Length: 320
Image 1 (cartoon, rainbow, N blue to C red):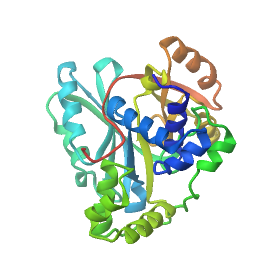
Image 2 (image 1 turned 30 degrees about the vertical axis):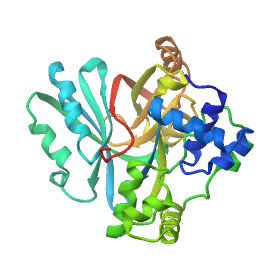
Image 3 (image 1 turned 30 degrees about the horizontal axis):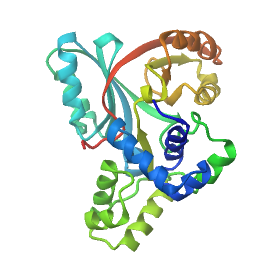
C-alpha cells in the first residue's frame, strides 16, 4: 500500500508521465528529493513504470481488443507467448482461467494476415475461439484523457500538473529511424533522461527535447503508468462487455468514463459495442458497482463481466 504522498505522486505521473519532480514537490508540499526518493521506491519495490506509448491511429495502425478462449491447461502458456509479441499490450488471464484478453496493434486498412497475432491465433492448437473487437473511439484512457480520477489531488493541483493539450491526430505521421529509436527507448522507460535518449537516437539533447515536444503536442506520443491496482487498494479487476442502444452509445460511454472504477473505456465493434476495464476494492464492491452505476447507464441492453485473474504484460507493446 502507499501513503498520501505516493498516491499524489502516482496521480501526478498519470497526468504527465514526464512531469518534473520539482513541480510535483511544489504541488505536494514536499522537496523534489523526497519525490525522487519515493518514485525510486515505487519503481524498485512495487514495479511502477512510466511508459511512453504511441497512439496507433497516429502511425497508421488500429487498436484491437482480442479475446482468446482455449483449454484451461493452455492458458498460461498462450498468455506468455502473446506477451512476447511486440504488437501486444495488456495481456491478461481472465474469466476464471478460461480466456486470455489482450490489446493488439495491427496495420490499418490491410487484411488481418498483416497482423502476426490476428492471423495466427485461429490456427493455434488448443485455441477454441477468437473474437477481435476494433477500438473505434476511446472514452477514457490513451490520449483522450489521462487517468486523473483517482487520487488525493484537487482540480487546481491537477491543472498545475497538466501538460499542454495535444492536438487531434488528423492522419498517419511518417516516423524516421531516429523517431522509432526514440519511441522504443520511451517504451522501456518513459522518464528516460534526455542524455540517455540522445544516445539512443544519435541526436543532440536539444533535438531530442524539440522532437519529443512535437510528438506529444501532435497527439502521437502519450504516457501511461504501469501500476498494480492492488497497490492502491483495488484487489478485484474485471472487463465489462456492454451492449448499448446505438443512439445512447455516446451518452453511455461518456457517463462510464466518469466512474472512478474505470481505467479504460471505449466503443468497439462486435456483438458488444462498449468495453470497460474496471477495478474495485472487493468482490462486494464490484457487485455494488455493477448493480448501481453500471445498471443506470443510458440505453444498457446487456452486460458480460470477465474477471481478470492475472496481468501477464502491462501497458508497453514492446517487451522490456
